[in-house]
Length: 97
Image (cartoon, rainbow, N blue to C red; front, side):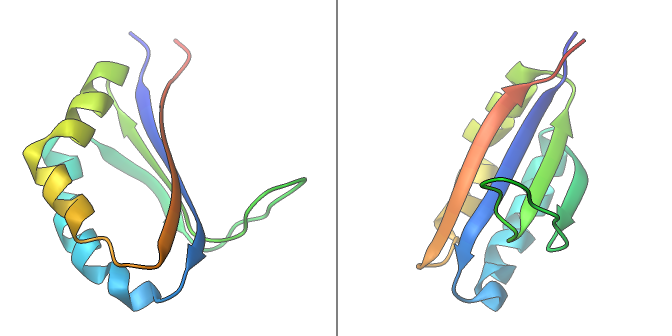
């Protein structure tokens, strides 16, 4: 079965410290949903139209599991904690077997 991935890129973060409340809720919600954090960092080498801000990659056992984790009550509470002024490109994608 193909894995599922959350891919997030933050093109604009006006106050990185303000993400703390989100991170405290999102981490346990992702783990409860079966997600494994593969990368979360500000060290990005971007090419072409790439964005060099924070990028996050989370792996799930399936696309369905990734979608269910996003739709979970726990993760929805984390989303409410995202601060004003953030911008995020978030996608759920299916891996290749």
